[in-house]
Amino acid sequence: MSREFRQDRREFIKNIGRKLAAGVLLIGTGVLVCRKPGNRNETCTSDGVCTRCSELSGCGLPQALSSKRALRK
Image: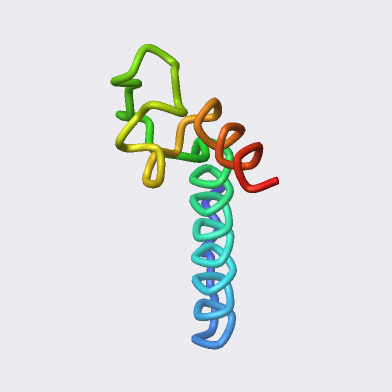
């Protein structure tokens, strides 16, 4: 009961293209879902007192971003 699977070149290339596109879409979605804004390795060096911190301008922590917004107003 074995059937031979035959496929012409055009169908083969279409199938490979579809699978490649699906793989790229899946990996791209995974990267976007798993990524967090800001740097994951960043830690606070000033015990949460952003106004006295010398690294405030380059900090990406949520509390620093909030402080920067408040200082701009």
